[in-house]
Length: 112
Length: 113
Image (cartoon, rainbow over all chains, first blue to last red; front, side, top):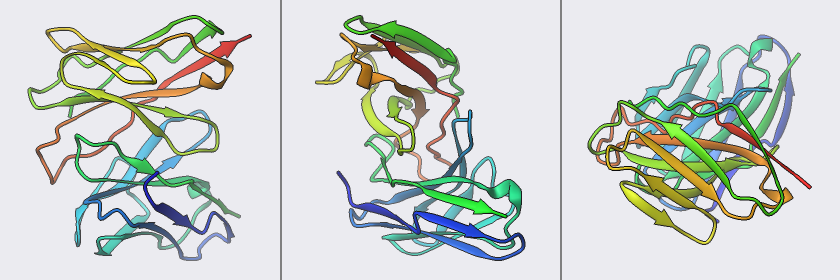
């Protein structure tokens, strides 16, 4: 399997605090993605990156920002966490759209 | 981006073949069709990808008709461990900016003993 890791794996935080989730890949993949998944729902794209410093919004980007200063790292930031952002977050990476994407193990975030 | 439509759920029994059809009526010329599998509490895992006709690997087969407006994932002789959610995706491998790996709702497959 491709080397893609997420940190932390679990986090509980209070409403209004900033939170940063990290996705790290060792495969030199060009594309990276952040998704959230809620009970009974599929994966919804938050933000994605198609290169260093090249990012764009997905379908549920409000309240989230991202940064990619290095090929291997894609950071997801919740500037001021809200209870509606309680979810499981997955990151993924791939070389190109005609290649398979590899997913991390997920981060379970609880905002209380 | 081509939108995909899949059945919400399907039930099957061990040893049977499971076929999941995905509709993508507005698929573009350069779009590939990709299927992923997701088990509970895990990230999705790539199963198979194709452009046209038929693709087969050790896990599944993918059938794509000539008009490419739909595709069918075929899982031969399923076992209990094939119980998962299966996602169909359509995307252009050539474009960079604006090209997103977007998942639909997926099909929840339950394999019964």
